[in-house]
Amino acid sequence: MVSVAGVSLVADLSGALYRPERRMLLVADLHLEKGSACALRGALLPPFDTAETLERLAWVVAYYDPAVVVALGDSFHDTAGAERLTPEDRAQLASLQRGRDWVWIAGNHDPVPGRDLGGTFTREVRDEPLVLRHEPAGLGTTGEIAGHLHPCARVVQRGRSLTRRCFATDGRRLVMPAFGAFTGGLNIRHAAFATVFDGAEFTAHLIGDSKLFTFPASRCVE
Image (tube, rainbow, N blue to C red; front, side, top):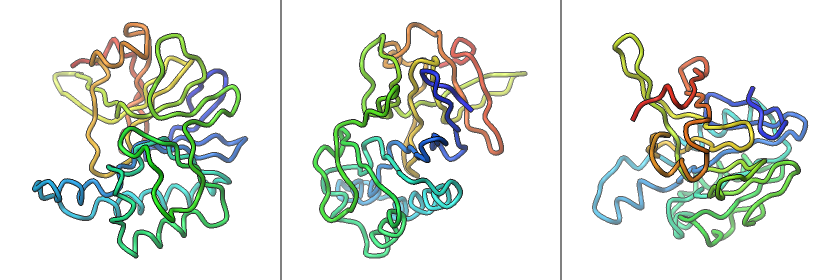
């Protein structure tokens, strides 16, 4: 469990967050159709990222059975991503939405809602004391859960180095790891995180194979 502004949340090994009392599941940065977007630019990647991401999402949805799912932006890698969904992937997405509310938050990669995706579209969701958005606001914000930065952390112990996706939080706000299959990560010691957290006074919850590993950011290295 992690706590943001006094709200207890389940940090799942998939990279999702679950708020039990609201039956609300949060995921960030799915970047669906990244493979096809790269292929259009001549960088050939295996065209299976969307199917893999939706399969992982289906497992998490089945496990928690949320009443509402909120996707925190960059759900598609570009504004035309939804149009490139295969019929099979579109059907999978429709199946995941059935029987629950689904909210798409606009991201910098996908600011324009896709067509016929189901669900509702918004810039942010306020669920006091929390505010859910794509890009973190400036220093001093409280209650914010955001994505965008794709946090990962690197630790060195006993001469061995480990780099994993992570949840980054100081208890007042939290940045979620990217959920998508083809998404990279930005080291939490990067200067971008200095605009979110005050110095290294925050915690990284690294996603392991069977549990989270918690380290102060000051223990993590570039």
